[in-house]
Image 1 (cartoon, one colour):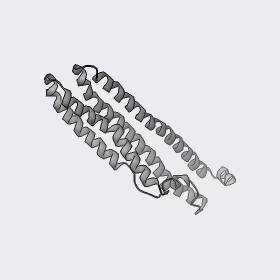
Image 2 (cartoon, rainbow, N blue to C red):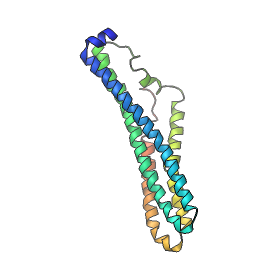
Image 3 (cartoon, one colour):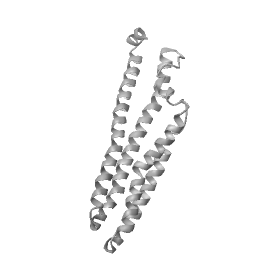
Image 4 (cartoon, rainbow, N blue to C red):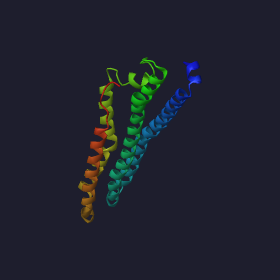
Length: 185
């Protein structure tokens, strides 16, 4: 295939595109995974400040916003990672197969192999639960803590907590929708 790829400029473009997409996918994976750590650090910081003084309980309303922003950024990056994989599996591999006139299903085999193993569904369900626990649950806990600990002067801000609850529910539903629990190509 090396001789054929060096002689065929279109194939060379496809292979270059594949390499570029895989590099972008790897960068997005690193960025996406670091958002989990950023969210955990933000939670720890806010909860430690909020736990020190009842007046500072107001800061608990910041945590749902942080969870939402980081969770949405995580979700968008996760979707782009999946979109790159879909593009390689469905479009790029078909283009290369047609160009080299081969039915070899081993081409870009990793793109489908890791989606077809017996434990994929359980991994994806566990990842869905982890994502909900990391990005949604802490926001709801902060809202709950605000509701039960807010002094009377802050009770008028419960509408903010209700709005944040609705936003977190939307994020939870989007995380579920994009969980990609399907198997195979």
